[in-house]
Image (tube, rainbow, N blue to C red; front, top):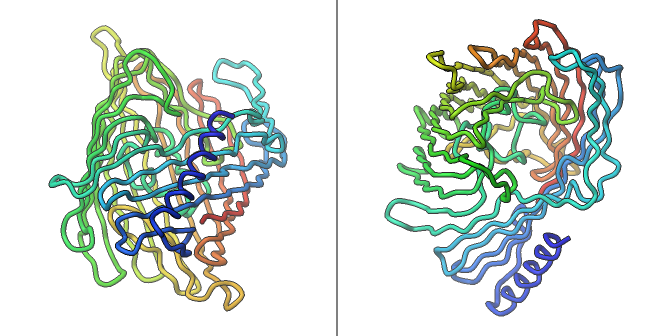
Length: 417
């Protein structure tokens, strides 16, 4: 409840500042207040993501229906005096969400029967982005706080603009997601055709975790190999050198559906790891494609033994049958805008497919492997409202050699502002 009170206090302060600065209100994919000279800007936004899923005999469980409020966020962003930015984003999806329930029975790699329930806590509000930045520096923009580590295009693209419901399998396996640290970012060439981000972080999860080690440094570089209007081909690379938190490295990806437990993965004693990624993405008319190869080299502390080399890759395709295109700019995918929103037209309809694989078994790290095939369609009613349908075929091999798998269908209703 303390976090809820903090958010409400910030909202009240924003209202006071908007009045004191004689800021004008407008709608720009969300509520925006700005001064006449644009030196002071405040945006109030948020997102609601509600999921329904049916899992057919995944991990030994009978087909069941599951529902989840995947996200219910409130976001405040702004600019102070033209050169200080801020962002505060909280997720209320875990606060009082007693309706989000899913129970799955499965057998773990040791042969023990397990039951996993996705019932969330009734008193929890989680921190997402929470940082302050200084813009206009000779070296770019400096941000300090709780934010994404710069790794992989699928990780850096906002969940508001994702083609599938969840992060792809290898990105979920290897991405450090958000942590607390210092990030320096710079764009170069016309229209941000080249981006460079680098930072130092402490593994803090929701901003409050404490433990031994957990420091990392790394960065991501992207560049446009070719552009002609909205058609663009982009390439990039990421690297992260990581000190293990509490002398443990863990990689346990979910099978591209949040209501299901991890089917593969492991946690092992380790001093640290190195993460690498190479990526390519292209927007060509109504089609778009993304491909990434990711790898982790884990120092498993084995006397005179080899490091564990883990890896994964994916290819993702999309095509707008209604003629729209998916914007690719400054290193990430951006918001899709239907040519004619529903009510004045049909909205935008997108067909999609992806293949993903991850191998988490090498040396002392024995986590198994998994291959997924996903198909689906998205209906963009307007720039802020989407219905997403995913059907995923899952095939996993556990560390003991046993195979599990199945098919999952999921529907999401998404609104952001």
